Length: 307
Image 1: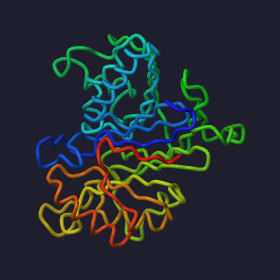
Image 2: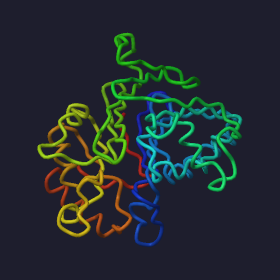
Image 3: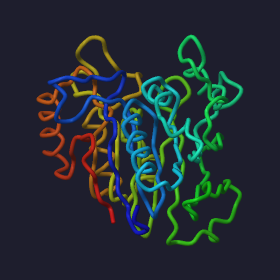
Image 4: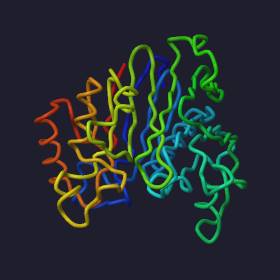
């Protein structure tokens, strides 16, 4: 992994449930997972089924180099389509792996680790988190906090809302956090990754507001790449039963409105509905590009280079 690299790759682009098959070959059928390689670090956003092949690649790299595996997993929320690949993420079971797992504090659970164990415990899965051999740190992160990625061999540094951020080297990769309140039932975390004047914002599972979400616009302002939920076409959202207002997802138009207001360079539309085949997504992409030419549908395994 190059020290100066800043690369984004979608490992899973679907919402709800996986949709493999001949109708989803172009864009992909795995649920949400985004791989970000920056400044020698591996950051993984969400653990849908797309994380499975990423883990297999990490294991292949380890087999070839014998270098221990390091990764930070940032969970936006704990709905099943964002965690269902985690039990099959092989590096978390490997003794030569160091994993930092951060996400929101669940309202209905004692902590994040307890919530993750729900998808690992029998009868759902035969091996619990406590039986997996990786070195790991599981913790919570919330709005206003910042992570600084200084040493690829260690966990990221944590800064609270009260800390002086001026001590962070401007050439260090960092992650900032915004909480969105527009996804049932506990909201969602939105992440901004910055490195050497370049940035990507991940805003999945978010629903648009009248007049756009100003908090998100400010958070994403000037980003090189905005990754935004766009599960619905406009008629699906408000006209075709069942009406989907309040379900916590956006239309392509809502995503475009945020991109325009935030003056981002590129817009990746993601969290594709499992009901939308490749042809349908191509048509949605054309609609979005008529209003924001640098919009595109997220495609699995195609790298996007920011630096």
